[in-house]
Image 1: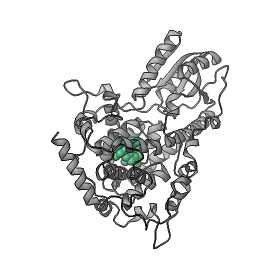
Image 2: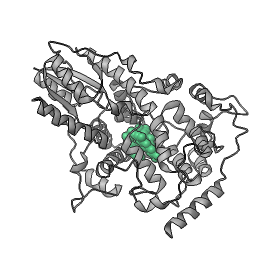
Image 3: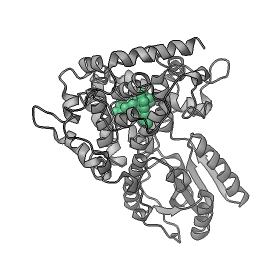
Image 4: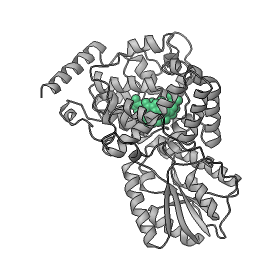
Length: 469
Ligand code: FAD
């Protein structure tokens, strides 16, 4: 008998509960459905998804299988594929964002009513959101007690790699991936960002090994420095499930056991991802609404055509560290964590623009886009979220540059230079941006759109008004 393995954001052969369970029953039909949720992804996540699909299709071929691609409403597609292949069961790994939960609930009921077996498995998180509870039985709102509650919990050992997958007697037909046009919205940026992405399970494993072999030791001290490569860079692989959090957790635990200095801190960061999903599960509107309702009265500017917002998106604020970071984002599809905090603080505080607009820009540009971490990150910086940084903690980009990019290497990497030769990476920005942006190659004529002292004073005055409401 054949089982459909419905692939979603779990592009891996190792530690894949749904795939392992499907393989244990006999033939497997791996299917990816391009449905409304996929169509609604931002440009960069969609592009990154295409790379993940290509890599996973090749991995499946190598174990005697293939990836069936279909477009349409997921329930209809799964029914069709079951009919075409003779499959009697559908297995998948669970997702936790509200839109996926709603879709999956409906699909499970639909498949069961057809007489098919429909079963979901855990694998995208270390701890499913409802399994971690405070002493009074509620969700956590603050990270530190969440960390204390989970750090000693058992995380199951990763399941072995599926080395052979049996083919069904009839393979259903498949779409051609190129016909889906998942990279179209990236325009010419696709070629540039593509040079910085290492997609697929094998690349993710290699990155984890490099991190554990050499970078973890200095992780705690070096992770905040913008000018060094000190972090795991696994976020896009984790977001697409090219590696499981359990694999990363166990590798981190081994480093800890071997006495690597930064290992505990690394595990803590991985648990920030868990905390983000815990929050999103319990507060599904965290990506659209202020988590603290009193922030609804804050005087945010929420106009996507506002010239300050446009300048921020395009790396043209005249604030070198902010512009460097926004260009890093546009060229690589990623941004250093500290730079995310600095650019988010600058947007929401110095420029007074709503975090929702920043969140949306990140959502369209990040190859590691993760709805929960993105929402938590924005609300944390803006001050409106759970366990948020206090609003008056306003990052000063100049002080941040002194502390975390003291030699200016990060800025040199991403900004054109008037004195010396502009770096290769800084030039890539001009190859990636839409022609209509009309960005200048030199930064010399970009005067800051907002003075730092003025922006800070205005932000604090607005905060005082909020408090007195
Ligand atoms: P490492 O430092 O090597 O950490 C290992 C893993 O832990 C990461 O891959 C990630 O999965 C997790 N992690 C680390 N820091 C955080 C954090 N602060 N919050 C949640 N998880 C974390 N991360 C995303 O994956 N997707 C997003 O869309 C995203 N948006 C963000 C938006 C803002 C405004 C902010 C401030 C942060 C955001 N982050 C997001 C978190 C963080 O910036 C990235 O996870 C990190 O930069 C990824 O680099 P890395 O893989 O080298 O991380």
